[in-house]
Length: 324
Image (cartoon, rainbow, N blue to C red; front, side, top):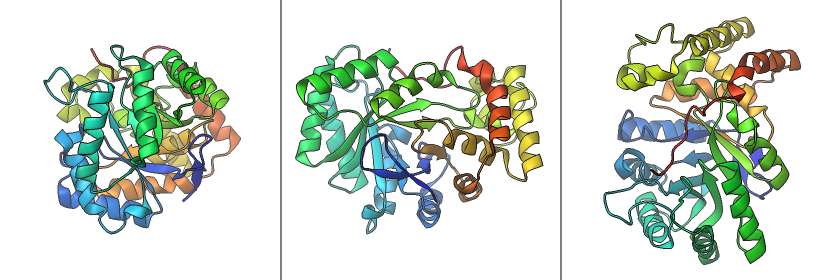
């Protein structure tokens, strides 16, 4: 396993991390625990979750699975998206963040979180309030590092400016949707992160499975696929993206690897990327994707993939979650 610094911080994270929004849902507790076991055995040290994943079950399962080996992982969670129906059960106010951090710590069975991320920008809370609350969490020892997710570039830069001005702990990472089928972060986010020393943590690295080459039509997907479980996913399955998935699959076959491994390895080679989080609902999925951390892609392969993915620098992100 390769390890990279998370931005300009001193924290080192595995090139491949695991995303856990399936834990307690598509992956039951026993399967989720087995995935964590396989991840740690494979050298992965970065586990990403959130307070809202599968109605808090993801955090609970992770906490139970990590008992006795909490020190082996860099544990990241998030808060800020809608948690409940109450008026204060969303956003990044001091009130909400402190309440959610305590809940996460309890479910995760730990007294600190390595990376605490704001799940999305909150237009109704002053940024200084959010940043001071996060700074207090770091100073208390309950949080080691802080990051953002689903921010626009100007929002990240404003936050960094306030932290600099007020002497507060600053974001060290930014979690964004990023893949061959969604290169929108390259327009503004990647240059910003390179300039300001933030590490990129891509989610949806396989574009919901499109980059595995398993989709041949927007009308029908393989058994167990995202399209079968979420019919609205068809809106992403234009002929252009289906063709991209097929091209990646053909190239991967030529190179003797799985399409998912090729897609993740491409992403690992992009500037500012610290760790790529890949979801798994089966141990076999994780085991297959572990190969990506040891793959070396030559410049010709990178250029070929870059050319295929060039149209996806424009348009809308594949994934982007905001408060309404």
